Image (tube, rainbow, N blue to C red):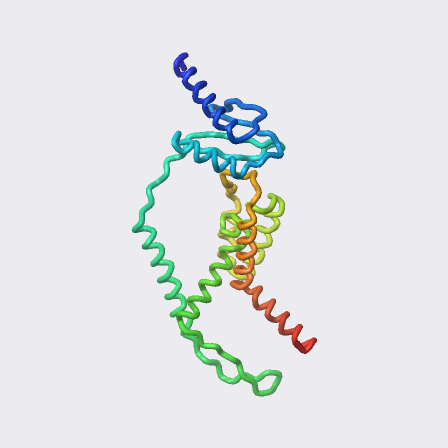
Length: 249
């Protein structure tokens, strides 16, 4: 690197340092492996400051990420990776494929047959068979897929949510419980989630700031959706029915 390139690089670093200082209180600023790195002071507001910093870096085609490392808050700035252009046709094809396969599954699985009377404990009995319309069964399949996607494991949507709320230890426990649950419900899905668990979660750009109240409320809503979409709903319904029978409510 010649003197001109070194001076230009130093000038860019000083400019980035000035921008960071406008938004954060820093303890140390340096270049590590050609990446501008800033160690921030503890106990300062980071959420809005980080969002403002990202907006300031956009015209420079740069992006930043915020992490905790060895009990320190570290901010690194690097060139923004090139984004692949979105193919609208592919998105529409995936949408129609999802809707089509869901309705097809509902149509084929809804072709049930009524069962004849079956003796129960030596006495004549009956088995209640509920015949669902293909659209209704397709909706049930949609609920089931939603429940699987909200499990707190790996790269599932539920895994992304739990990563933003809990520590690595808690996420590991939830992942193990999810895999055990899936082994009882759908072992191919359990193997798939187990495979995805071997990959490390990349994490968000801001992995330091706490979640807003609105996002915490959204988390509670998603927990409710998970319960209503899963077999846990049957358990809760049975407990409510037992409670009403015991106490005559």
